[in-house]
Image 1 (cartoon, rainbow, N blue to C red):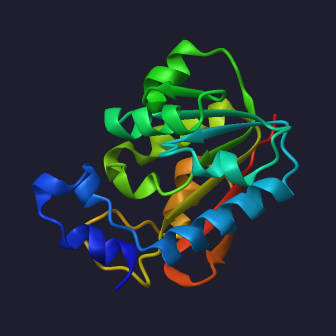
Image 2: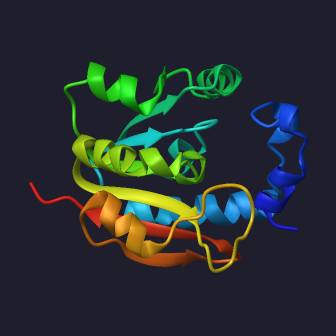
Length: 187
């Protein structure tokens, strides 16, 4: 059973709680490794991790990279801050953060967040990610060819339209339901 199937098998009142986040370790690890290798290959100076969860990406990239994580769910943010007291991990959603910060980041990462974005908000969400990026946006999303559940799957074409830019795509090894993409930001 893949992570999405496990998530969807949870009662609605358990989603977004520790009991509702049951991602098998091997799928979480496969996604984390693929994402961190991709981010590291871009040789970033600074990274914004949108929906950073427990801050796992920070553990996998060079400590020389200036890492900022944002997380809007209280209990997840509390765990991230406890695990990474020296890192900048802010309790915020993307819109609030974008309005409050004048900064841009070398690489903006939204790993596993896109499936939770309402399709009506997808373009605005992607454009906000792009506005915060100096060089690249890295996203992961559910592939509609391998996923038929209740979370939002996204075609590559609709993602390119939302970003108004090409998206270079690669699969996550070991997890056919997820894809990784890179958008190059032209400034």
